[in-house]
Length: 108
Length: 112
Image (cartoon, rainbow over all chains, first blue to last red; front, side):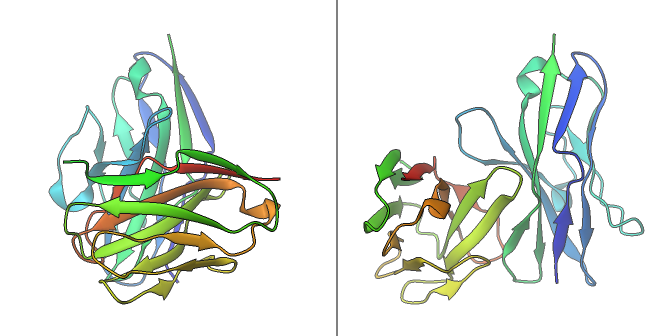
């Protein structure tokens, strides 16, 4: 079965520090992976998807099939990055499977 | 263009009562979904619909039912609410199953 693991429930960093939110997945085929973000009292929204290979709000994520990982990175965290981040997986045409989420807290 | 909307925003409900959460999208998306969001558990799929007239069970369907009479609406019904159904409920839609999902603002439900 498809599974997404986000090992950290909370990640706390200072403004300007690098950030890495970990995501590992299990799927035997070629998955499609996403990062969704939920800012305080707002709806979930797509941050980025691996097939687009783009950088959104300074965040990037690279799919590593060997390590089955899709970690989200940003070199310099900003206070407005504080939010809940969910890694998600679509395998084939199956449903979107979410990880349990990591809360990022960026302190001044 | 509203996108995807949910109603009510929040609700406090007595156990045993029936409740329908509404979800409407105006993007003509074929697929729609209901998730519940619980601390430490992330988002879990309750039910989904690939297209109008069809529905399917997700990861945690027990105690919930859905219908998809048309493309735009996908109501979620709790026939007899229980306290364990206290959660934040998110509706989502996508062009087709497997595409990017767009989420509604959520409904915060408390069952006492």
